[in-house]
Image (cartoon, rainbow, N blue to C red; front, side, top):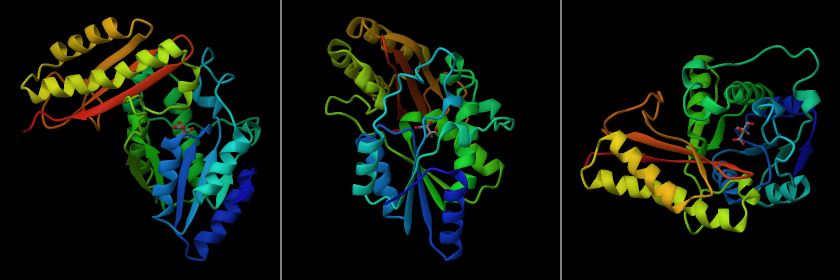
Length: 284
Ligand code: PAF
């Protein structure tokens, strides 16, 4: 596996490969790989001639009081793992190369960047949208793969791709979970043992709401307060940041569960903010 650190170099390498007819898959990441990342890479590897993995802890998607400095990093281990799953190139740029002095262009999707995670992370999606667009123009992938845990991010990226006519097919892949249901996340390492045990309630709660819907309950405010109560009782160390039932594509709040809704949550523990979601349908 090649390691490339300069944006110009990855761009010329990818251009050469595309010109010679190769299909390129891109898996953008911020590193500290877990099975969630590796499953995206394996999936992408099977669908393209070459797999490019990017590893960049993008400072522009962190707010001033967020965990940029504490974000877990293990670049050597990540490089080994990416090589093992068959990545052809690992692109690991420096922040100064991706956002050099004078950088002044931003990609924004305001309609999809207001509710849910954006309420407490107002600049986050602008940072994600911009860096992902840059990664697309640098690597020119045929397809790119993202985890569905970051559902809002995926919605933003799909929108950009359509609106800017970017010639890349976006694939969302299901969240990979620990055996007790906790969504895998690089940030899980920041949970204390007690918090880790309680964090399994996040997914259990989502499943509980899906069961209530299956038994005929469709009123969002009832379902959300049932979920809030469950979290308050079984997860006292977590502070719920939001619980929301929204349209899966447009992300606007939905009052009744219909064909398909997204139930999304964010929970803060002392040193980690975790998100999760589930798609629920009231249709039998
Ligand atoms: O999901 C992530 O890890 C990041 O938000 C991404 C897509 C790599 C952009 O920095």
